[in-house]
Length: 202
Image 1 (cartoon, rainbow, N blue to C red):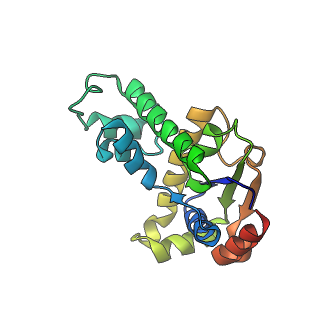
Image 2: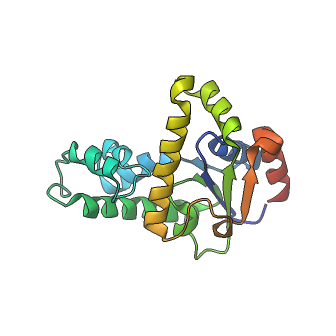
């Protein structure tokens, strides 16, 4: 592995992107960050984890974001701030945390526009993990508490949320191959197969 390699992973819901990231973290012996970024951002800012969880990977211009944040009243310096500006502030804090973690050394970072935030660095490998819908449906049914009747709707809504977030903050198109170094179909080799292949290549 190249010295100080930072691996960022964008992923379709149910594709196994998070699991591939965790596998790479273990195989390469480097830290893994997903929800851990929320904890780190809360610690850095002094704000509650709940606030970051409420807006996690949600674009400031989305109706869902407005409804969720509208029901949350922060008791700190952000109170009274318009929702859009509050979300911009939270995104900036999380971006600073991502940059700090990248400066600390090699790691795997899942989602949250990490590829774009770290775009000026020459030590990043940006992956996007996708898979056919049928494959993702099977994975989600196996790993999530959701019925067959609702699984496609959950996948579509989660992907839309992630796409809106990424497109809003980067001005790029989520999942478009040119925005990543490697775009892979997880159904071809499976999670373990891709972890092995990538660990040998990176």
